[in-house]
Length: 278
Image (cartoon, rainbow, N blue to C red; front, side, top):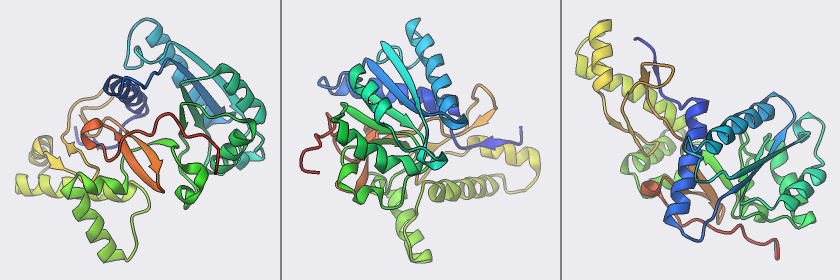
């Protein structure tokens, strides 16, 4: 009872991506998603991603799960990450080009981000959506012309300031205090952790365990992540907070939110822009 978990679990993240792509396809009739290609680094991180997609595909084949409407076919091909001594993605990219996916997703590391785009340009591969899913991105990745139109997953982006007063307040206060911008979503998420606990203590009026647990169960906090935090049971825990990631896209050097639709900060750039001129 005393464990409160804020970050979405892996299974919740995977389900949220399927929901996001489904809702985008419903909201924008020109967006069609049926074939999905996963390029995954051959180590543990990438292989786990591939295994997760196989489970999602199996569910979709049965008409079940959030991917049922957008995963008619799936193909996964491994590559050796530049972070682990690799860096030649051409064979994998040629396979992806021949497959012609509606959604191309790569699961690797930050060292793969720009070289993969450069080699995709080299082989003439420009899928309708070019999605990166590494644990982190290179510093200043968005400054590269190759980044334009690249899609990614994340819990937060600075542009949420446009649609959330709480996010804007956090952003301005963080810069005022630390003289730098928050680098990742862990800054607003960490702030949310502390603020959530403080709100619970205030409501309980005590640090007594049972009373504080009860108070935390009732807290509803409009967080700088852009969503209201309210605890609810999940598949694995009694007190789960956030349950989804967001779908973001680099546009003009900034990460824009394209889903959830109620937090959208820009229209989706679709299809992925051609390589000409960049």
